[in-house]
Length: 188
Image (cartoon, rainbow, N blue to C red; front, side, top):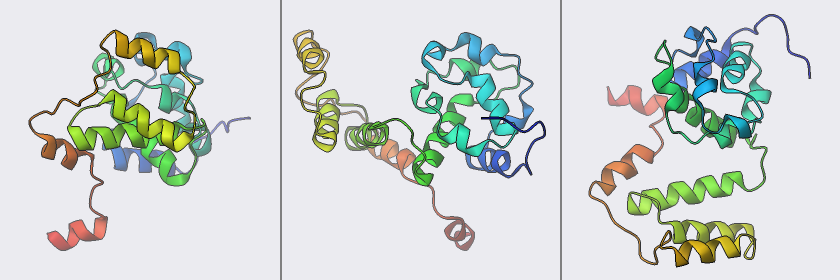
């Protein structure tokens, strides 16, 4: 696939910046994000290249990339950025856009993402056993990773009962979709 030498009309970059409220256009490609990323080795597109693709308007390539799903949201890239670009938040925005547009390229990623967020909404944190159960029921992949699951149970890495945290309502509110633009205007 070839990339245009000139940026598009800027609508994709503007949309990403509007939805994420992060000035992605301020990136000057110092590569600190990519060099510090602990999962960059597993990405199909390096974080700094992904930013450049956004700047060039490569919507499909960005939203279909594995990189946005491989990102661990560890915030290393965001803390290292000299321009204070919160790339971890941009990755989250790109994941939401990819889901909304049906551009998720990896099998079962959307299912896992939804099961993960549902577990957090319910308990305020991840309950691994519930997460795995929801995921396996939806994907019908009951016996994949069974040995790993047994090992996690034996080592106490998965608990049978979820831990509850204070502030579950606040976590749920954070994960709920923002109101539509028309609702926001009418509330003002």
